[in-house]
Length: 462
Ligand code: FCB
Image (cartoon, rainbow, N blue to C red; front, side, top):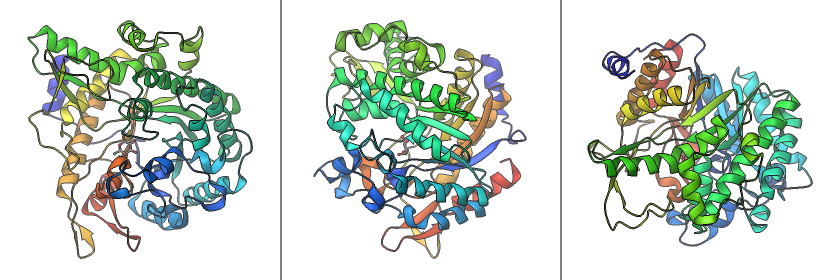
C-alpha cells in the first residue's frame, strides 16, 4: 500500500474518470441574506452575529451576497463555468420557522425557484439540510445537546423532501457535525457560542442520530442519493519515533475523525472515544439501538478537507478549547506555506487521508463536498489574479487524481466556494470564492481561478 501511494504521488494522474462530478458549494446563511423575508425566523447565527464581539467587525448574514434575490444571476455564472453539480443548503428557519410544527410555504417557494433554475441550466441540485443555521427556537429548547432535536431534524428533512424531492436527486443531511458540536458547544467560537464540553459530546450524538433518522426517512420517501458531509483533518504526530506523540495524534484522530466516521460507517463508537467521552458526560446519552440508527446506509460520504492537524505530546500543556480532554497535547504549525486563514497548505495529507478512508471504511464511495482556500484578494480591473488559489486547487486536485489512481472510489469534487461569502466568525474579510463579490454593490467578478476551473471542468483534467 505504501509503495503504491508513493509512486502515484510522484507521477500523478491528471485526467479524471468519465462521469466525474464537478461542481461548487455554498451554504444558506453565508450567501442568502434576506434574513427577515417571507417568514424566515431567526437562526442561531442571526443571534450570534448580532451579539457584540462574536463575529469580526460585527458582520452578520443579514444581506450577505443577496443570493435570495440574485440567485438567477448566480445560476447563470455557474452555467458559464460548466458546473454540473451545485451543492447549496436549505435554511431550516425559512422552511420551518419554529423548528417544529407548521411549514412556511414561502420559504420553500424560494428553493423551488432555485431548483427549477438549476435544472433549466442543466445543473444537478444537491441539497444540504443542515449547514449550521438552527432555528433559534430549537436552541432555546436546549439546542443540539437536547436529544429531541434528532426527531425534529428528521421531520424537517421530510417536509423539505415532500416539496423538492421530485427534482432534487441528492440529499445531504449534515454539514460538518464536528463544527456544530465542538465549535458551537465547546469552544463557543461558532453559534450558539456555548462553552460546555460535556454537552458538546451530547450535541455530536444528537446530530448523528438526527442524520440517521433523516437518512432512513429520506430513503423510505424515495430519495435517489443520501449522504452526510464530515470535515476531516488527518492528525500528524511531530515525530514518528516518540510513542507519546503517536498517542497524541491518535487522540486527535479520534476527536476529529473517528468519533464521527466509526458510528456513521461502522455502526459503533470507537472504544477509545467511548472511554474519553465517559470522563466528561458518562454514556447515558447513547441508548441501545442508537448506533444502528446512525449507521443508516448512505450512497456516498461527503468529505470536506482544508488542512491537517500536527500535534506533539507536551507535559503541562492545557487542553485545546475545541477538543475536550487534550491536556498534554501541543498543536503545531507544520513547516509548509499557509493560506490567508493561516491554515497549512498540505495536499499530500489530503491524498493520505483519502487512501486511509478507502482502507478503513471500504465500500463507501466518496465525494469531495468542499475544498478551497482564502487569500487576500485584490481586484484589478475587472478581475482578481489569484494565482495562490489556483495553486491550492491544482495541488489538491492532483491529490484527488492520485487517490483515484490508487483505487479510491471518488465520485466528484465541489470547490468551496462559488462566491466570496460570510465566513462565520471571520465575517466578510476572508474570501474563498471563485467569484469575487463587492459587498457594497453586489457586483460579481470572475477571478482568474474561476476561468481556470472552467477549463478543468471542460477538459475533465488538469
Ligand atoms: C467549512 C464550512 C464552510 C466554509 C469553509 C471555509 O468548514 O463548511 O461553510 O466556512 O469551511
